[in-house]
Amino acid sequence: MLRACRIAGSIVLLFMAVAAHAQYPTKAIRVIVPFAPGGPSDFLMRSVGQKLTEAWGQQLLIDNRGGANGIVGSDLVAKSAPDGYMWCIATNGTHGINASLFPRLPYDTVKDFAPVTRLGNAAYLLVAHPSLPVRSVKELIALARARPGEINWSAGGSPSQLSAELFKKTAGINVAVIPYKGNALAVTAALSGEVSLTFGSIMQSMPQVKTGRLRALGVGSLKRSAVIPDVPTIAEYGYAGFEAGSWYGVLMQGATPRAIVDRAHDEIVRILNLPDMQQRLRGEAFDIPADTPDQFAAVIRAELVKWAPIVKAAGLRGE
Image (cartoon, rainbow, N blue to C red):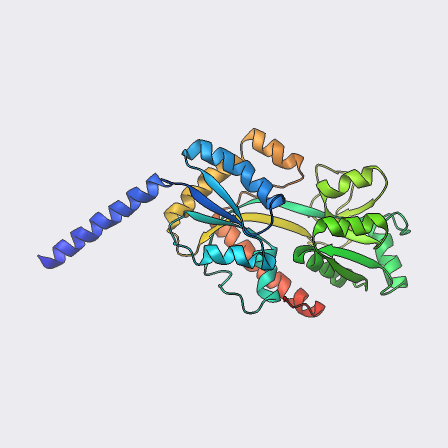
C-alpha cells in the first residue's frame, strides 16, 4: 500500500510539473545582456522581446550587465534558479572564445547553460583603408607576404581579434593585429588610416565603403551577403569553410527542464520566421539560423574546439 501511494504521489507531481511547464511563463522574464546597451545583442533581443511580450502577456525585462568579456552577466544566469525566468544572450565570444581566454571561468560553459536558439548571425566585412594598394583578398595576401609584419589590422573585442588571427593562420600571413576597446574604435582607426585593415560589421562598414572612405575586400560568411551581393566571400578565394563574424543566441540555466526550453524555443522561432521580422533582421545584415536547442548546443561545442588553438597560437590570455 505504501509503495502504491508513493507511485501515485510521483504521478501527481509529474502531472503538476507538466501542467506548470505548459503554462510557462506566468511572470516577467529577466534577460541578461552581458554587454553595454545599444549593441547587436540589445537590438536582437528587444526586437524579439517585444513580440514575445505580446504573445505571452509577460514582460521581458532587458538587464544590461557588461563586464569581463561578458563573464559577469553570464555568471548571473549560470547561478540562477533553473526555472526559465532568467535568460542570457550568448555570443561566440562569451560561449566560444572565453573558455580559452579565461581558463578559470566561474562556470562551465557547456554544463551550466541550456541553449534555446540563436537569434542571428552577423558576418564580418574585411575592409581596407584606400591607401593600402589592394582591391581583393588575393591582392591583400600577396602584399602581406611581400611585406611581412608591416601591415596593421585593428580589432575590437575578442571575436574580432580572434577572427583576424584566424585569417592570419588560414592565409599564412604575418600582419600586426592591434586590439581596440570596441568595434566602433577599431573601424574608426581604419577610417583615419591609423591602421590599414579591420573586420567590421556589414551595417557599420558599408556607409563608409559607399563613400569611398573604406574599401570592401571580402565577407566572412560562407555565402555572399544579400546586403552586398557584389562582394565575394573570403572562402571564395580558396579558403573553403572560412567564417568570421558573431552570433547571438538565448541561453537558460543548465538544469532548466527541457519542456520550458522547448516552449521558449518554439515561440522565439515562430517570431523569427514572421515576414516582418525576417525583413527587419535581414535588412540589418543578420542571417537567421533559428536552430533547435540541440543544434545550438552543437554550435557551442564546435566553437570551443575551433577557437582554442587560435587563442593558444596567438598567445592571448584574458586579464
